[in-house]
Image 1: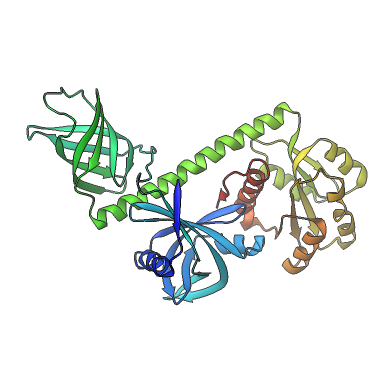
Image 2: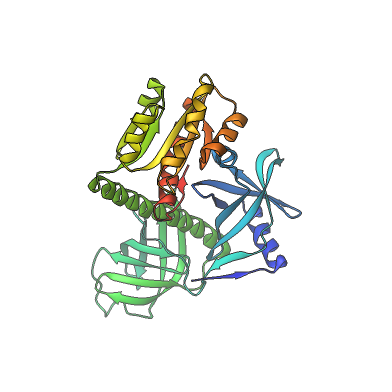
Length: 367
């Protein structure tokens, strides 16, 4: 459940705090998402530093606005902002975003928690006599659930007992705070932080939980990817059809995109392409070479033979980005990109994102 606010004073204060703390933020487009961090709030403009590939993603996809997800105190926030361009602040190259008109906030009656807690441990002193150790099952900025290494008799630990607990996070980070036992079931114990975490500890734990929640989201999306691929295999369909006359590029794309997928390839000629389309590909990748302008006319017709909604990606070699983008419009491509060796990872994730969004409205793929 979420709620939102549109007070410009509240919104400005939210982003002012985020920029002052250099908090992390996930920028999400239709097909791709990437990490960034807040840098500065200048007037009505938010400046963020994007991770590698972020600027390229926005340019290739022709993005005019992005969704943002970020931690703020005990809550996780979300907003949509217009992209104003590239700038520089504090000597850092930044993406410049307009201050949003509205911010969404998670329901703060229940702080977001994560179950991805491998390697996270807790310990507390039991009535001053001995140290009890535990692994953490889930955690939020308001409390945690842990599995004790031993079963503690009710005579030694009860619901409503107060303890001082230490939580060890990866990176040699330790948070020590008071807590109240709220739940007990054999060795499974739930506690609420009491008093509430300090501002510093809350910020540290909130960032860590935020990162883990993003990892959970991606894991869920990958499971759906695998399920969709299995369904396509059962239906004797193909995930991707690649149309190219370039044998080297064909082999490279098959190697790059073929893991866990069924790939079908065809040269840009009517008969083989019509046969390939009859095999019901989920997505089509067209290749346009600047050295073969005569072949572009055929590429412009492929979409007319595809089932409605089949996504098309246009890759170009030996061609200027502007000319490729114009051709992409004629080909009804969702995106157009000039293919170079350093864009292999980008292409992989773009394909994942397009398939997710086109078949089930799933999470954008992370760069």
